[in-house]
Length: 252
Image (cartoon, rainbow, N blue to C red):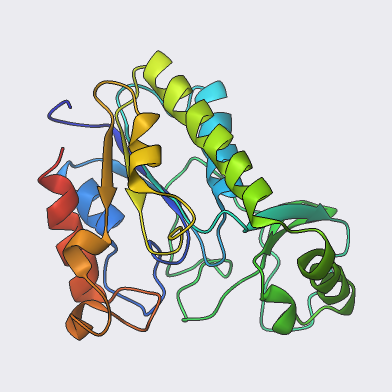
């Protein structure tokens, strides 16, 4: 890979965001190291669908290119995103904020960011629609009745892991092919969120020359083995982010 980048782009779930309130995530540390802009597309309850959408849209619009470093942190293939015209916000302290994508995000000011250790299942798409982030148990803590009922029905009747894994493999092949064609440097990062559904050998088979894959648990271990690296059982601590940053930097 090249020595410098204009932007560091991180796409993933809460494993890569500010859950636990670290001073900086591994992506932010990489951007600082390369004196690059940081495009932070990680999010609580983020899905591979969301990562693919934001990455490919950015490429189509010329806002992510071969001068940038892309890190795709995959999460559980069951996660999805939907669009909804139900925009009822039951919490009066939450401001509905239409995010301006492909610009650096000030996490200290954004009400849509996961800076407080909670999972934000919605982000405003436009004036009349929200994007709803879904995972298998999200209906248990979704406050809006309409969304809650939909999520529960979808979880119970419209999920099949073999089908979701097939979709993920196609998504991965699409991303590896497109990024290779556009000569965009990329690191694909796996976490335990995607195991045991995807074997590493299958994952790496679809990589193109110059593309890198890493299993982040190779360096941070498990919460039982290395508790200092973990905020809780699913999210890394500030020390964990610093360790992942060093690990990724050594593979660039």
